Length: 121
Image 1: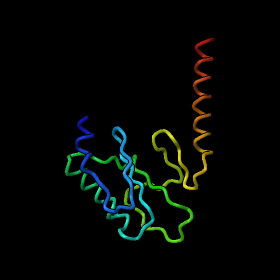
Image 2: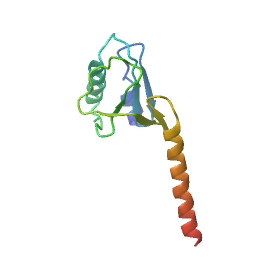
Image 3: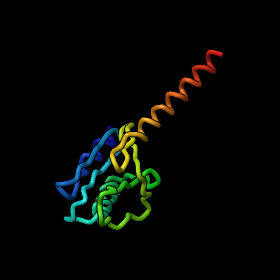
């Protein structure tokens, strides 16, 4: 509950961006607009976290890019760029195909069925 109170003042710098907040995760969805650069937007989130005495786990922080853009913004320091990311249990790819999500679900089902087989035997 304390996290929700401390995170409630976090907002985006641009009206074109969205913050998805759930439990202890915050996911900024940033458009490819040119009003502010990506570094400034990310630094705003880091600054807001520091003001509330929270730490951003940069090992879990990932950046996906739109493959249809011709000019990419400068990459963020210490942020790993990936082609797919998991958001609220759903794996999203940069081209919006769901094969990675389906493969993850099938892998999870296969693992659970194997465990059930071991328990049965």
